Length: 135
Image (tube, rainbow, N blue to C red; front, side, top):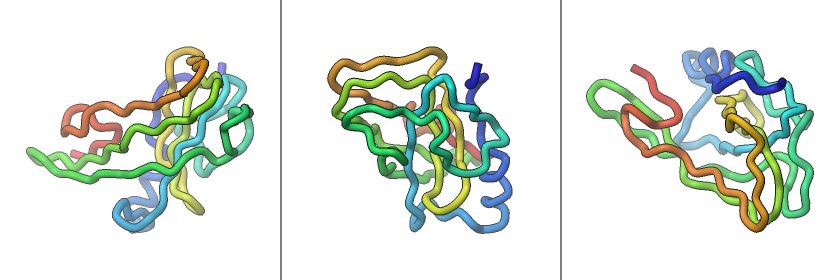
């Protein structure tokens, strides 16, 4: 089984402390993967291995729009909902900085299939539920 949970990539943690990630200036994408992908906390960069292949899906995924906020001592990043207008099946996703590090791996828990539009809706942008949080 390729996906074993959700991970913040180790390479992202290092890049963050080295000042190599800027959510206000860098470009981020989300790529979709099948269960044949091998993604985990050690994933360091975007890979096409195991990526979804479907009509209407472009290798490398879609652009993401990040929002950075701070509340009650927690800084957090959330992303706007992203959709593909196609029928496809995905088991998980990789958020990554274009030309840079993997940020996080998302495990959907099982294969998710769309017949018309595939949508990844992120949790609310709050200090307790955003995809990325630093306390």
